[in-house]
Image (spheres, rainbow, N blue to C red):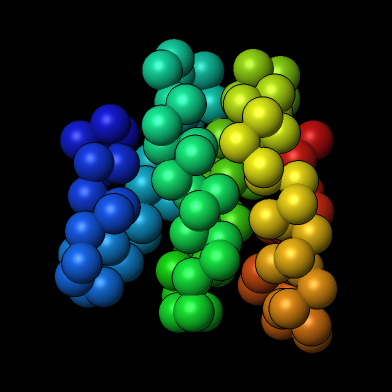
Length: 106
């Protein structure tokens, strides 16, 4: 997952989106993986992206990685994730594909 996370700041939107889709598919099974701090920080940053697909994936991955994982929840809070998620929910309006994962962190 760290190898994919390295590319989330790349200039190519296509590369970033492909990495995000792969990370989203892997993130369900990665809730107990260590050393996710940089990935979580990058995902919080991507919540502010203008591309709706990037925001949707970032919110979904954050939801998966923080589900039942206190350490990841703390990290997301420390890197401004709460504020970013609130802003994401506000700007998403009726887009349930964004709002549902943004508020779901069991």
